Amino acid sequence: MFLQIHTLTSYHAALLNRDDAGLAKRIPFGNAERMRVSSQCLKRHWRLALNEILSLPSGIRSRHFFDREVFRRVMAAGVDETTARELTEKLIGAVIQSKEAREKGSLFLKQPVLFGRPEADYFVALIRECAESGAEPGKLLEERMKEHKKNFRALLTASGGDDLMAGIEGALFGRFVTSDILARTDASVHVAHAFTVHALDNEVDYFTVVDDLKEPDEDAGAAHAGDMELGAGLFYGYVVVDVPLLISNLCGCDRHDWQDQPEAIDDARNVLMGLVKSIATVSPGAKLGATAPYARTDCALLETGAAQPRSLANAYLDHLRPNGDLMQQAVNTLGGYLARLDNMYGIEGPRFIASTHETDTVPSAQWAPLNQTIEAALNSIFGEA
Image (cartoon, rainbow, N blue to C red; front, side):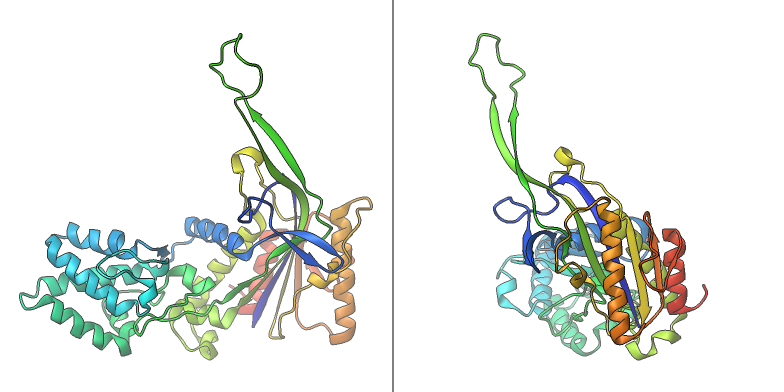
């Protein structure tokens, strides 16, 4: 069972996502070069928004997890510094298998790793337990970590931890780890790079800075001059949610048993409601202070069903040439392409749409305001709430 989310969002002059040269990211597609926003950029902003509205445990993605989240908390709990450091180093060696990812003799990781807060709580409790055992704490920790290679999830749950070990971020966007202990989590949410439905047409904005304390008789001219690339565009975005995998990530069940998890289904409904609303309302953006790149989606099409997902990006292989209302033109083009797919493959599931524009050209799509559209899509997946 999948939830597919298609969006059309227009941004005024902005620099939504920069490359290493400070220019707007771009990609050739079809018969034109397009401006784009990377999936990493989009997911980052959605994660931050979801952490504000969901009560589920969040994750910690950092190179400083062990020194700032584990070591500091162990010290604050009263374990002496020498013992705390020794045990934290042993913990790192047991948890992080890749030697390239850690620095010997340091609590600092060379690359960020995603941990869930339940994992952080458990690691702190484990170190405290070993430090207070009165025996050889380092040896005891090594023995415990060897046990954990086979049943870390069970031990974490038994200690009062949540099955959502890698946090809501891991449940949605996955976690790749090289570890015998930590659980690798496959992403249940798949995010495409957004791109403009028309050709790239950016310009360089030249700006100057005036020195407020410059005397009237001093040299004329600005105290600083610079430039940045700006572009306006109408972006097509595409996201797919693998619903059984999301349920599995939330509660630890087998993905084939996803329909038999009432508590996880309640959580999934809240997560998906928050995710779709974030996709529709949360803007990415570099240069926030200089461009105020805030916009909301003008068209959100949701599809549900068990059929293999497919993007509607090919609707815009031939880039749009503005002719009147570009947003209406984009909606009509999307609907026309979807109708052609239906003629070839048949209609493969229910469709729900919210839009500020006419949607008569989008076949078999039930229109409603956004909240009701999301509810209808979730009801088609899970049944009535």
